[in-house]
Length: 372
Ligand code: MRU
Figure 1 (spheres, rainbow, N blue to C red):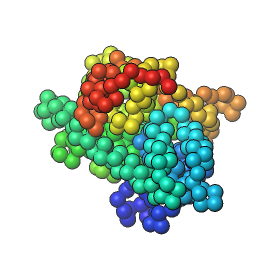
Figure 2: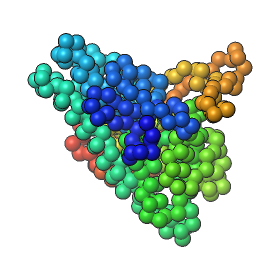
Figure 3: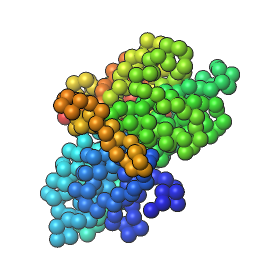
């Protein structure tokens, strides 16, 4: 299927309403492959093996996973015990992004309240609602984040605003617009002169492969840099603003994001450069406070560190870059403490990275964290 023939989204329901299609992000930007997910096991594999990735997209995919559970229930009856069991399996696919359990649990809660004959339709509708809400959340993040870029542009008399981002927090990681990229798209579309430093994001190169591809398709000037280059650029006044996404944000404002984000925050602090985190509220885990102790950090297969993947003779291939017998460790995320974050850009506006800041925007969540 040509990806050029429709509005690009990384996930969509087939016309028959029973197959979830996803762009296989493992092979982007070199190959365009659409994977068809028809069972819960397909969804678990797609999340674990990162056909789909990025916190909001994982949440939407998990939500559709529970829809597929209902659709394919034994003897056509999506009974409570079976659905709850399938929800556990889905939520265990990846540990760090809280959006996964958020999306799965929201569909589960809705279908457990529905009578048996209504459950499949209810699940399909709630999963689709979640996708549309995330689109709208990202659109709003773009609007709220835009003035930050506009202000720098005015201060620099229209010279390029240099924004550094880490990993891919673009529409591929969400459904449309992205989180960290949303203000960039708005600024560019409104004629602001921007340039984006794209961290390559080892080991899976989400920046070099995905963010660069997204920005390039939109015509946004960008430059791919090694993950270690950011500090140097900041010391030389070549970064005006850092905007990244997050996979889980605690109620006190600590932020888990792709490994290496913490080092960018440290360098930004040392160089007085604003460091913003863009997030939809689905990424806030209101039940925890301390990011370092309470956020589960995914450790992935060390082979992702030992091998690097790229285009070779027209095909995506992997090559070994380490000594064959050297062990490797693959920590997928790190935690940036709230004190290093200048502010959060959310669908409801910008706030400080603190409990007060978050509940100022989301007063309905203003209760003591439960540590459940
Ligand atoms: O391992 P990934 O590719 O799922 O990690 C993605 C990130 O770390 C993103 O920055 C995060 O999910 C925010 S996406 C809007």
